[in-house]
Length: 436
Image 1 (spheres, helix red, strand yellow):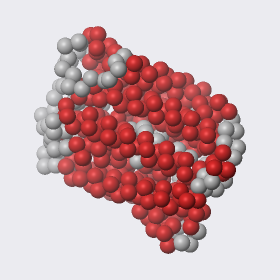
Image 2 (cartoon, rainbow, N blue to C red):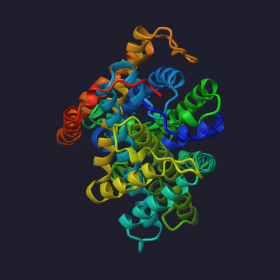
Image 3 (tube, one colour):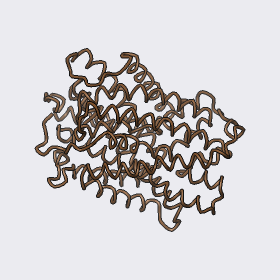
Image 4 (cartoon, rainbow, N blue to C red):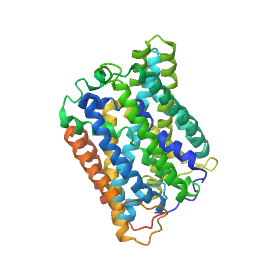
């Protein structure tokens, strides 16, 4: 994989990386997970979440080994290239790009709905499109500026979730939480897995800023591990306390469950309810902004290696940001907004994620055998147990998602088949280049 003429700037420190790790995901605590209640009930979804939490803890420890030993903006694409060559890299790159490009419009929809909740005269779709314009522009200004912005909004978002828990916890009723809590039995638990993944999905986007991290061997493990622990505690607390304040079925199909919950506890006309809905935007903004960083770096890396048009590997000389990738990703998101619905975008994004997790864990096993001398500043604990657990749970999640979402799965894998056919027809599968 050839190097770009203009490199990316190394400015990210541990606190920035924690903020990016948490910021990438924290919108998942604000919306999207509640669709899991609709298919599994409260206890069913809690069980799904505990399964997925084990998946992510073992995955992140394993993934950190790959990220620190191969600090490349392509992330999973680069690891699969090193393990399997061009075709493996294509599968991982497609999956990662699908995950990030489709998560962003889902969050934009939620941003539009939150703002519409506050100001009903503002249309959801046009507000969502406006968010793309604003945050693409902020990302164009430079990674240091983007990282500082992410740190501020992530701290505000975490603080807000803690305040939310403090407001609703006194109204928690075990009777509400356990009422009709597993209506679909274990089948519902498996159907809920993609929505449980939404509580953590995209945290692996930290890998895509690896080329912009100061001292990656030390910084990346700190960022990943503190990030996943923060998210785990917030996810379980938000879900459990929200499920006990009312009939949880009222909250299963809306994009603003937290403001709605505070409205139930305090009354919709209460000034705190409206204030919370306003500051509730911070969590969505943190994820939206951070995922834009992620997909732009993935597109940049794929283009730099010849998997996407070369223009997308361009780096702005003044700000050292991949400006064409930022703009192209934003345009894709606007099209997805016009064509998709939130729950569909969530499932497609999670499909991309789980395929990428499988490719990454297999890459880890292959590289341990193929390149035992590779410098590994961080080694996954309890190898091979951790990556094996992550791999098995990822395969289980993939089977469950495909079984319960057959048409969306057909769309996802049909797209991958078309991309692979084009790739092979162009002879790209024969390219032999060294990883950057």
